[in-house]
Amino acid sequence: MSNILVVGSMNMDIVTRVGELPKPGETIHGMGSGLHIGGKGANQACAASRSGAKVDMAGALGTDVFAGDIRNGLEKNQINTQYIVSKQGTTGMALITINASGENCIILSPEANYRYEEQDMKPINWSDYDVILLQNEIPGRVNAKVLQLASEAAVPVCVNPAPMTGFDRDLLGHITYLIVNEVEAEELAGVPVHDVDSARQAAQYLLEQGTQHVIVTLGSRGSVYLDRSGNWIETPAFSVPSVDSTAAGDTFIGAFMASYFGGTELKESLRYATAASALAVSAAGAYDSIPAQSSIRSFLNQVET
Image 1 (spheres, rainbow, N blue to C red):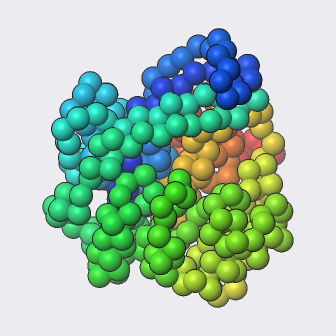
Image 2 (image 1 turned 90 degrees about the horizontal axis):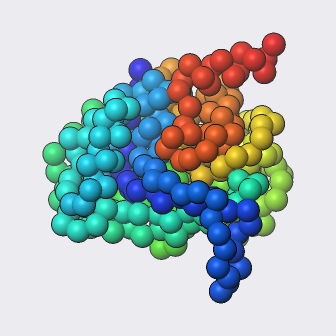
């Protein structure tokens, strides 16, 4: 069993389904709304836990009613919440609109996530973990401090720099595992990413910036992996109906890290994570759509027979 620390965001997602995404200035009728636990940090923690990892979550919640709902939701998924701090005010929120084909638009309001500070991490014993997961929905200075403390403890760090706004490229040289989608890869590498070959070109550039391992996820085209030793793995996607893509990337990351640091071979861990993200895409919601290990293995058994 892998032992994973997620330092990152926790949000309450307010999700509305529509036939078509609204145009600027247009008012449309929704087809139903709901409240769901989200945030890239919480999603990745849930994905790792449901794939069998022991997971601790660190970050900040507000003092509103959503804070208790999120904490309870994490604990129901066997995620340790002792390193989550409370900050006066509102918990992070995301306003998500999803159209009939599963595409989404998201407005993120960080709130308590951006009030998380370096001193809030003092109780954490970094050497307890096999790997640490980071995103870009908490202050950049906190992520930089995590990378420093993890390096001092000789613990690898996986970074998903989403959303890209404000991401410090100087951090690339301190990242063990960088996982990005095609849009993020293009922005970081300055290379248009539209297929496997261009993804490999972008990954090579990112390795040259000091990152040790790069995974570029390509949606319906699967993913590519490249490391500084020249190892190259192309993993095809599974064909599934697209219902809601909101947490697909987070599911891939959490499932991959749980599998790989749990002792599974690299190529099989990538295939496992790809199956996990396929199941997430084919179900509604973010946090709620993240599959359990048993469901992922059952899916893999079905597609292999």
